[in-house]
Length: 308
Image (cartoon, rainbow, N blue to C red; front, side):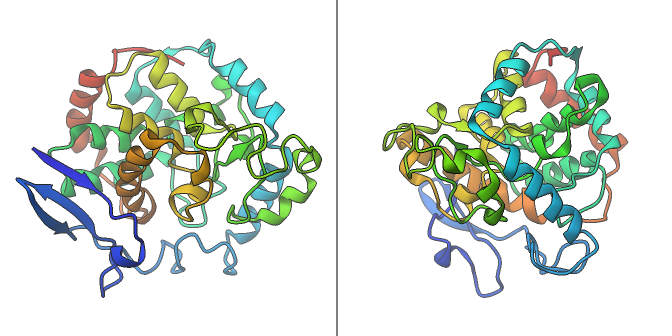
């Protein structure tokens, strides 16, 4: 059996070429996996996740985060979860949902302006090349952003600011590592004494299962997968729910809310994030060629039709 983990010491996890190293444990021996080369620049020729760089997308992204940070409150997120966890928007297959995302470009993303299905396939295929035996991880990559279907008119046509973008805990203080943190000054939770302390309504090491996250596609797809009895492993559900929680998995914030199980799952999220972030490009995947493989995984881990 092969077990893959990520070294959590970021400084020791980057080699001399600037590539992220993955530690592979195989038959008791440690090996380093460097198959996936991290590109220096995004599709626009800039550094990845550079929110300060002047570019054609900077104004769009900045306006998005201003609206997001002002309106994402604890009460708002609770109401959205109550609304959507009823799963009354319709029934369709995983692949049908993937095809719906052909119509949308993520306004919060400074690194790509391609339809979302392209990003899903790029991420999944990059992981598939490096981890051919971890089929659950291939499928997780394909479906991790399917919650963005909330943008579709059939699902309520939600505004982008409450569907995409980085996620963060609500009910406690907003950490300064969150992108465009300055806009939280206008969020009403910032002035609520119950919410504006380090722990807020939570307790030390309470576990992320007990934390209310900002509402968006991560939380929605997590609810959909669980409610439809997926057989994907717990690590897959953790990746789906927290892949946009960059304050945690990139900057190490909010670790005081994690329990031991969260810390184990975070290792898999670190593995996944490299591909989610750095596989974005203008090179398109031939959908007809890869569809049969991903359909076999969908049939393995999900029912034919899901409630959404």
